[in-house]
Amino acid sequence: NSPSYTETGSMIPAEDSPSKVFNKLFIADSPKEQARQVQRLQEGRSIMDIVADDAKSLKNSLGAGDQE
Image: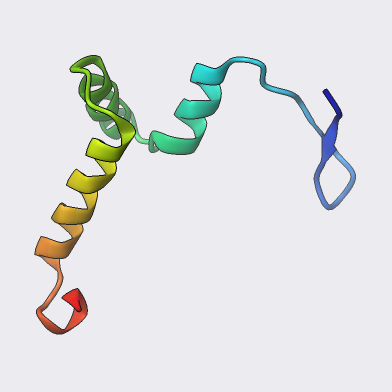
């Protein structure tokens, strides 16, 4: 492991837990959204299923011109 640093020189602590890294990258910060994502994952759905659902939801909220 090699340390990482911010632009100002502060050391960023390493994270050795894959599940914690996954949560930081793919699960939104709000408690409601965290609960929703955790439930989906517990149901055996992959991250690709979750991304596809989010993309479909976004598409449905856009106007016809923005969907292209």
